[in-house]
Picture 1 (cartoon, rainbow, N blue to C red):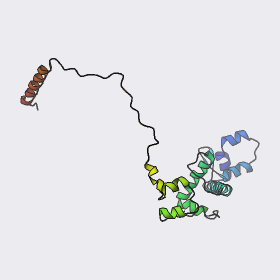
Picture 2 (cartoon, rainbow, N blue to C red):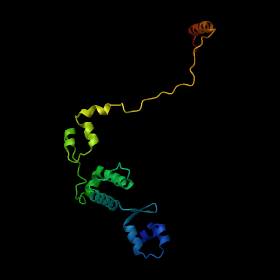
Picture 3 (cartoon, one colour):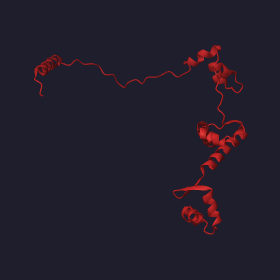
Picture 4 (cartoon, rainbow, N blue to C red):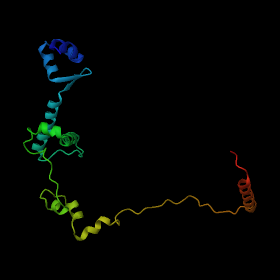
Length: 188
């Protein structure tokens, strides 16, 4: 596609309306740096991917850890979700390998056993450690004495059974109806 056609057709109407004084060079740069789809300016995939990973690296430099996709902090959650997507796709990992100077894209080492996990110096979660340890308080996991007791609502009134006066007649009538059903011919 010729640059002249690109400028006339693909430069979004919003840019032309907001900045009518722009010369031909500025819209041309906008088109070169962007992919335009349905009249919207979108960043080129590789640049956007690099920028997203650089944000993850900046977070790692500031906090000393990977961003978590499960946190309540929205900005960190967004970075964590991006990083999970990057780590899950081998093509993205290969494209970003030259930017990874701290080894975030390397596969994390999985411990061989629970003991290896507990011996890890980064493992400092006391609650999980106490649950998984062989200490005396292991039964605390199954101790439900601190939970509130279940209460049952009582009924406003309790019904009492009453014997039907003509029950014998209704039983005889039911038996007679059943006998008639058994002997009746089937319609086909």
